[in-house]
Image 1 (cartoon, rainbow, N blue to C red):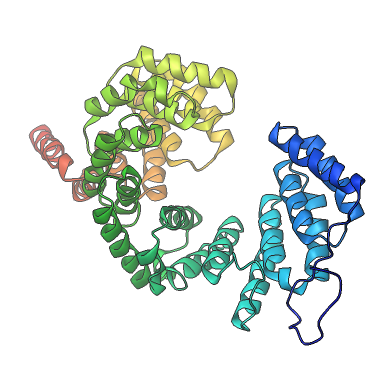
Image 2: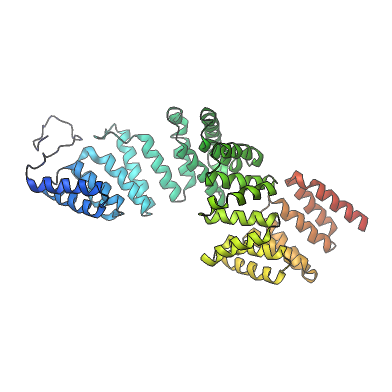
Length: 443
């Protein structure tokens, strides 16, 4: 192509200048390519930049420079070049704006990222065809969903995924496990934030669940589908047993995958299979050691099966590297409580409470410690009652809250708490019956 323009051509066609026929340009360009092949990113950027100055209208070379700057985390310079391309070449508007949105997400300017993707959608809705043609509406909506997610606007993120992508059957043509993972994270975060799942279109979520089931069946040998279906069952359907079934399939397909082992082990524990959970996690401790939350799960599972020395070793190592790690501090409080070192337990739990005042597990463990100190029974009742209010679905909290009330002679309230525990967890029914019997015999 040349610099000459045909007036009859559409405005969004890209016009290129021919590469200058001189040795300097060829030298810098070839040096840049050679440096890139050798992994010398800084030299490559410098050489391509020099070549571009000799041929500033070469949009392909400028896009190549943007990618190099992106790889080198020089986001401000990359952004400047993208703005130039968008301004200079109408036919590069979508790819330039789309890439700007990616940069804004990286530098945490989520509002600007959202605006970029909305601008792309507007152009696409007007029938604008990007000259490169590599970006379509689904690509844009995926990035828009990520931007909303990053900005904490979970319902809008879910809308983009469920209403604008899933409902169109796009995944029927090209399943994208990333969409499902993002949706799962949206539901997790919306729950933590306190948004109700009803605000995220329930019908659309159920539709996406059906789609994930279908894709899991079609991709039965892909552990990622089973892993994420398990997460969906656990988070959205609140069905630990169904989740465990899928996690077990994922583990059988990929027994050395750290995330699979982590979720399978955690699910075993949630389903009451504590020893099996510990055996699995401890056996794979070297696979799990790279992530702190994985190591913490091993320690907490070790506490549950009374392997306190192993738990102490892991938790102390974590706290040596990160003295403010809340989960490790709470874990040490639990460990010291089970070791009957109540003063040490109070020390750790007091530290945890300073870091997060309303952590239900911290408050529950404080209640248990007070319960062991008979003179502090009123404090135990207060802390355990607060733990129940903070986490009203935790059966164990109600069970011990009832114990504290019973010790204080508040038998009617104790029975109510025990009934609630049995209602939340069928596995506690026998334990609750034993408490009712004991209370009756003592009366």
